[in-house]
Image (cartoon, rainbow over all chains, first blue to last red; front, side, top):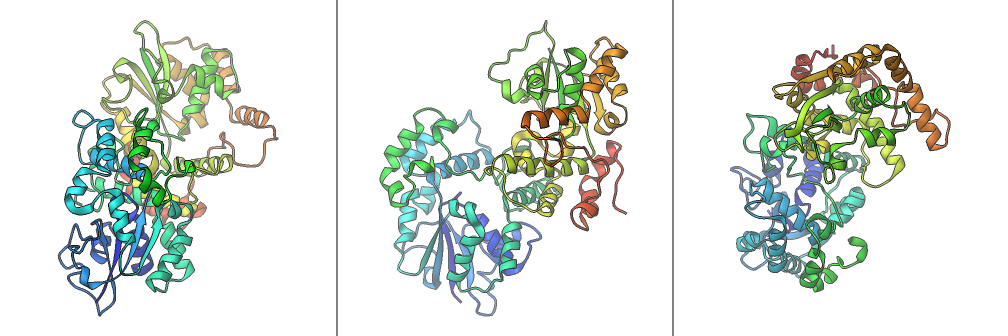
Length: 265
Length: 252
């Protein structure tokens, strides 16, 4: 039984892709944790998930945020990888929201301090410690794999998810009818996933959703399904000078992955 | 001190503001004039300075909580509430309006998908990210335990008798309730007049939807208008809070 990796740096659309793929393969999920059961998360394994308990030799899909190195878990079972990348400016802002969702307050860590640290490190410092590399080293590592890799962009998914996912499905060798794909994309819209998040967090009986946070963060308007924006200006979101600082630090890798165009700002 | 005109979106906030504006000032059908005198709190938060001697009317859609801007300067609030089914229907119209105005920012979704998301989330899922909470949270935050006087005004009652409701609001605001002034304000804030003004400024004749001033439906059935099964799902999520605010369930 082989593994197809769903690889991305965090906050780059991995959950979104997993929801679409899940609905293509298994229909509508009853709850968000269904995703982790059928499409396991290497960082958050569940007892009896598809990795532990594979079906009859069919390929399984596993999410990973790790940088691709020889030490990557389960590497020997790799068949191929789907690699998702996103404009690192939007990743930065989404990562900041993720910190807030985790309860880190502005007093503990200001928006600007977080942004400056992200820029200095080349990505989130904690994630680097956890083996995810920097934004650029992560993207480089999966681009240079010695097995088949299809790289897709978050921005293209936003523009035309159906078109991009058709390419993904072909790459993965799956058979999914057009109307099933259309349903899967519609059922995984930002609004639908945000709604699922709100419902699960409001449900006191539910403790183990896919979406970080609780009713307290909901009242503050902070959600895992955050904004889904693209091409944001760091100067606009954080303060003057951040975009220039970002460009100076990320410059070469931005160009390498096509995120240096002014239109993306 | 501030008097809030508070509501969940698409619940008649602008209608109430027109009524009050046209009773307290020279009547108009220009939304921009009303927005100037009774602005949305988020639009003016950087320049607004509350003063204890002056009474200002401000619009808000945010949850009432300690972090709500200027909430410490509150004198009282009017909370406008509307049957959440009709809020859903009204926002479907509003989304179409936004889509026709600008292609960006509004995702293409079918009405049924939007309705399901609205039901799942207990309100518009995107608005929840703007600190509006769910429909029920929003209403409860203002209507229960606010610590200042709150007048609850129903959209449905405005539709049935705007005159009486405006008189009630003016009394709550401790303003004169001259019958002639009220009648004129109701007349100049009628749906027909506001729609006419919108069409005139848009440069077309009233007719084709979508308009901002959309003839409010009351008592819509989601099963009939969108897709079967939605009313029952709706009642399950909204039922308790709707009951608490006196709205009947609709699924049979």
